[in-house]
Amino acid sequence: MLKILKWLLPAIIAPEEPLSPNELTRLSTEVALYLRNNPLLKRAFAIAACFVNVYPLIFTGRTLHLLKPEKRQLYLNRMHLSRFPFCRNLVMLAGLPIKLIYYSQEAEQERLGFKARALKEEACRRVVTRC
Figure 1 (cartoon, rainbow, N blue to C red):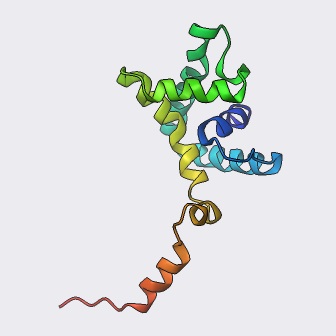
Figure 2: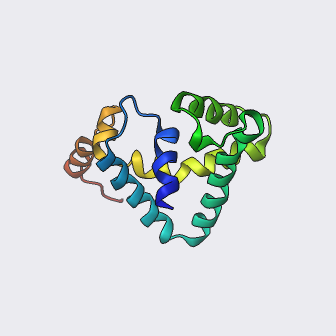
């Protein structure tokens, strides 16, 4: 599973700057742990990742993980915009646990403008009572 995640993570997330090897390993491990605790999602993810990897083989003769990063993005975008719900849903399923783990990081949330700490502090200052 970790081998799949190491090439799939940067393709799904497409960060502005490439992820460092340590960051990539950490995120891959977190996603693998999350999937290990949810066997049904793990099976569905494995099927979706296999489909996402094999899809470009039809058009280019190469699987997704053998393509250059720009081409990976092209094929992932093609799948997201496909008029076939099966294709769209499988690429979304492949990205679901990856995006869940990646965007739950506090640093990434702040980069996107969501200030979780400020929101928690504001909630703690307000007293909620029921009448």
